[in-house]
Length: 59
Image 1 (cartoon, rainbow, N blue to C red):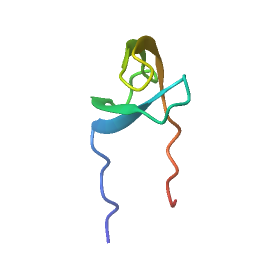
Image 2: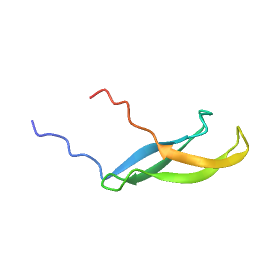
Image 3: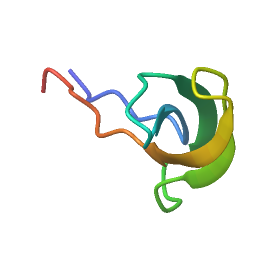
Image 4: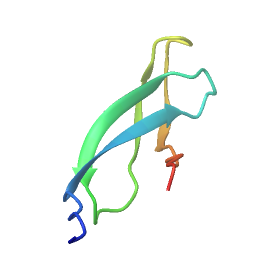
């Protein structure tokens, strides 16, 4: 049986570096660098850095 091909676009979760647990989800190309951006965190009501979370895959 042939292996399944991986999709070119993946869903990523950007987690707040203020450690509030707030996150955004985005899609990005698989070959692109990991995402990071400054966005609004409504829990602390400030703009903070959001970094792409490491995937906790089961493989």
